Image (cartoon, rainbow, N blue to C red; front, side):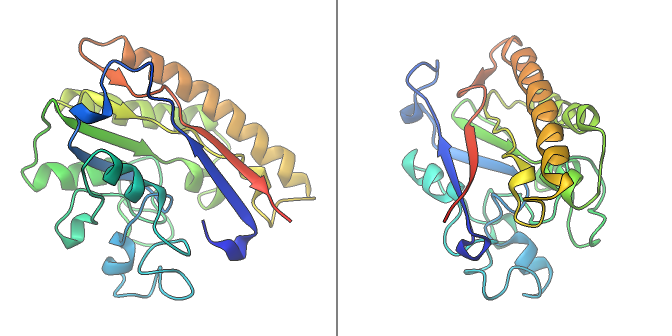
Length: 229
């Protein structure tokens, strides 16, 4: 994460108990927002978004988590606009169409449409990362966390219907700890929305896991957003 935000994100992924070993996977397709974007929004905006002080088109001060994660299983996280398999866009929301902030940013449902339009197919050794929702609250001002989680469930089911079987489904960090909310009434409001969203998302992940052949590599990544300093 951007150190200027005075935040630290810790991602803990437990894979020992999952049915699919990481060694059996070789390609990662990613759908989501700035937490996973490796240059799509930067490229789409001709460098206007995600430029300095951010690093190399990411919304961070270095590589984002999915780059190391993909490398660990022998894959890559190159932005799809650069010929890769990462369809995440900084600013994206958990619905279809384009983000409210700019028509340059396809939301998650539209990202999946871009994946289809490129003629992609899923194999048994593909892993799908689906991580979004924060911008729905922080940028689009949604007050309906159950609705946002339901949109994520729709994307899970769409991807399953397209042949995806191996999923990583992170939950949201506590949005109330975003610096501009800390110490204000919004700290409690956004943390409460986060908890409601994450609880609903866990239920949808359990429903997905119950479908034939579906495997969720840990139903949730444990995501902690901690104030530092």
